Length: 361
Ligand code: UD1
Image 1: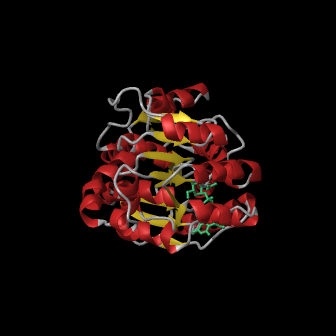
Image 2 (image 1 turned 90 degrees about the vertical axis):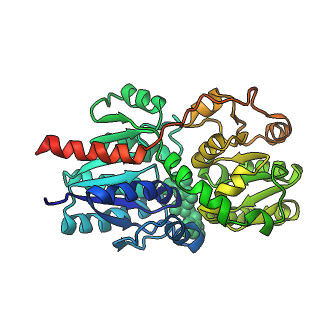
Image 3 (image 1 turned 45 degrees about the vertical axis):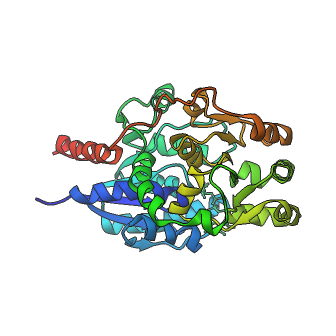
């Protein structure tokens, strides 16, 4: 039997976490090639994820690197198109909402290659976010839309997308359940940082709306400086703007700023935090699954279920609200309604891909 070929297109940290469980399942049934755009290139934003999560070495590295939105996305498209012309995959898989996701989807749709979008249907309804544009356009190019939540299915329905939509659960749950036990037994990050479980706050900030806007970034820095015992793995883009806006020295005087962490250390530091302050989508979810109260430094979230369930609160970049919630926010009930509690999502996605091809034959 000839196996069908799937091209998985990734480039940035959150793509890699989603690729890991999918790639593992995919390779049981399909030939997979991995195309890495090189959007993230530092060891601790990139290679460490392949090493720790056991993701196979990419077949193609496009070395696109950083750049303005248009430049970065266009460079990726040119290089992806060339590879798709040579490789002629039966399917392209796009993950999440990064510029690499959009570039892969746009290159593939114009070549009439079928696209599967992992983490389809998410919306913040804030078009100022580059990720929101990436999500909308990728969904509208895709043939198979794998939704992590029921809200995502509804969001697609509102935009008239009903064909090829599957409610599958979230692949990040697969990644987390595959690695949490290993992380518990094999990482020593709390000792290394001399942290006591449940006695520190974990902060992560990297969204353009927070980093690129001096007023917002300063409010966030002032809040973090006021809260005691904050650990802050700092994304390179955030470090760049903190230095540019003259906020770096103030921050490092009061806050424990560290390099970005690998996946296993990150799981442990999330799990053992007292509370989390973040603008990351993935970290909001991980906080919920690991039952850590989350304070989200944005005005809206794609993961509305975590807020509705009482484990997440939206505070924007308002210094007073950030500090107040860091002190006082707690879920009203310790129970959860299991928003992300669906297992074997990656296996189900691969089954759907397989059945699609049977239908076509
Ligand atoms: C990207 C994604 C975002 C995702 C985030 C996770 C887009 C539009 N955004 O944002 O959805 O949540 O990744 O981290 O795709 N840089 C480095 N080293 C690296 C990578 C980036 O120094 O390895 C710096 C560069 O200064 C670069 C800046 O970070 O200019 C921004 O990188 P970019 O790839 O544009 O997006 P992220 O902000 O990382």
